[in-house]
Length: 273
Image 1 (tube, one colour):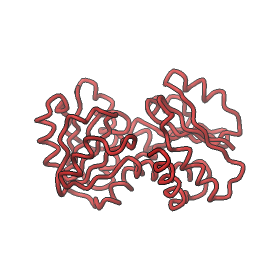
Image 2 (image 1 turned 180 degrees about the vertical axis):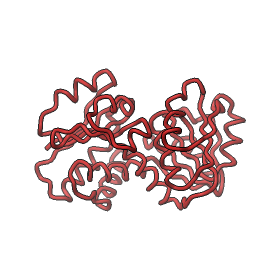
Image 3 (image 1 turned 180 degrees about the horizontal axis):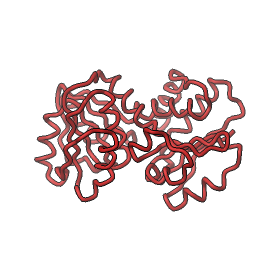
Image 4 (image 1 turned 90 degrees about the vertical axis):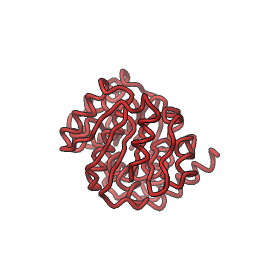
């Protein structure tokens, strides 16, 4: 059986290390996991060309929204968030799901987030939509989403409506002072911004948990500033690990071996250092 991670760029992805370790721990000797560069225009053709030996795909940027268009079935969670990072292909299916939500929930819970308080989400892409679902599941209803252009946040607003949440959406990312004020008041900050996009912001301080979904390079300037200010900082590696655990279960039908996958992830990160 075959599986792979798709995206553009995708060379940096650590998903092969995670899934390969899971297959070894589960005794799935005939399973292989690869990595393929693929953009939005190329996804339909790539999926159409896959044979019955394919179990599933992990989808990273920029494929999380277009994934819904190539699926024949969509989970309620993926439909509500408007984004999918997983395509399960076993049994002739094209089943889209979103394990980013589980990854964010597990990463924040591991950092001590238990619900309540105020959250700030940076960005409006598919991962930000997953963050809204995760914060809802954690019982955090007071959420500010900071973006550069509210006119381009329509898909995020639609996802919020489907999820039954009502975040405040502002263009505060265009004004560092406004953004920093909002961040300073937050109990939880989730940055879904791409590399470099948060470098101009001051990190949150003591008493705040920051999840920065970037994991390479690490720490980001934003995460480094937050750590220096006393915040509890969680890298995207925690989210990556836990979303992959859920993907393994979806694709193989077996529970993801967390300890073995974490060890493989740590080794892969150390090898790149």
